[in-house]
Image: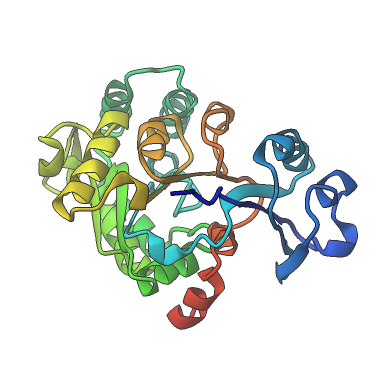
Amino acid sequence: MTMTPLSYDLVIQGKDLSRSNLPADAAGLAGFIAEIAPGAVRLESVNPLTAEPVIGRLQEAGLDAAMVRHGLKLTEFRLLASDLDSTLVAIETLDTVAKNAGYGDTVAQVTEAAMRGDIKDYAESLRLRIAAVKGCPVKAFTDFAETMPYSLGAERWVKSCRAAGLECHIVTGGFDEVAAAAAVKLGANGFHCNKLGIRDGVLDGTVTGPEENGGKIVDSDGKRHIVEQLAAERGIPACDVITMGDGWNDVKMLEYAGLGIAYHAKPRVRALIPHQINSLGLDSALNWFADGPYWAERAGV
């Protein structure tokens, strides 16, 4: 039996991008170029090896470029698992709440070092940060959750995935008070996160993980474990899973999935994860799929 070789397309996106102003080296990769949405073009039947250096130059020029299998459909996937802070939400939750409560500088420094990968033990870095905000009213987190800024296109992306039949979960090193509100706003099926120690309405300086992670803090290993568990319980193979994240502690779950997407990610993450969104919103990923715009329309967002 003869196997038909796979064909790949290169989807390039950017503000005001069109066929007429497509960089020449990119235009030369394909015989057929289609404008699939405002600011998005699809180059069909592109050689991935030839395209690799061009993709790098496009990204350096501020354009998003992703190589996808020709005809790839969103309905081929069954599970979406996404990080929350700096992915679905536009900022780092703990940093923002801590700053508002007067603990900002110390917490932000530890957070940034952890996300860069300089502090290898994420669980320890989280314990340090939570210890630093001991005494903070839990209301500071619930108030933040009511007004937190979501990333561009987050609701459209998640609800389009839901419309296409994917089960959608938030998997985060964040906390119940924020993740629950995000799940409701975005229409996610569930959330999996750490739990703040609270006594008499204020933080007691401790943090624990959820039951589905054996009570361990949700770190890099924990995120992957939770995603693997979600998939296994539903009989979903890794190739039918989409994961999204921005930080070093997301890499393992990004590498696990059939499609791992680095969203506005740290340089060390981008070096490992080929599918990236560096300039546009989360919903720009819909243009990678042949049926993406259809499901966005069906979702009504």
